[in-house]
Length: 126
Image (cartoon, rainbow, N blue to C red; front, side, top):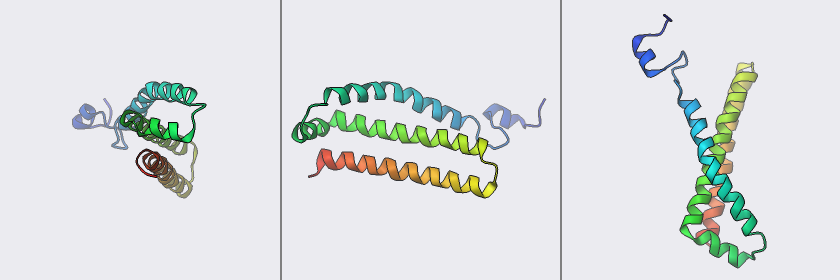
């Protein structure tokens, strides 16, 4: 028997009190990225020769807008989770680790948000 309480064992919580949430989130975003990436690649190939008006008409379709936003959210969340693991495992200075973890999170939100804003502006704006 380990040093965990009965409640921690039932909840699958380790010493960091995070449990398996991070692991599951990374696996679920990876699973979501399989069909979304295939859809994105297929659409990128088929949209290759379109002009701006045709592309705008394509992205203005609600299903395409939704799938693009879902793709961006999944990509940047998955990226952030993966880089977090790398920083936690390989950066040993506490100050550098905290700085890189904060930068990782902020950049993922900033870049993902700017991609989503761009998608929505093209789909619904001028």
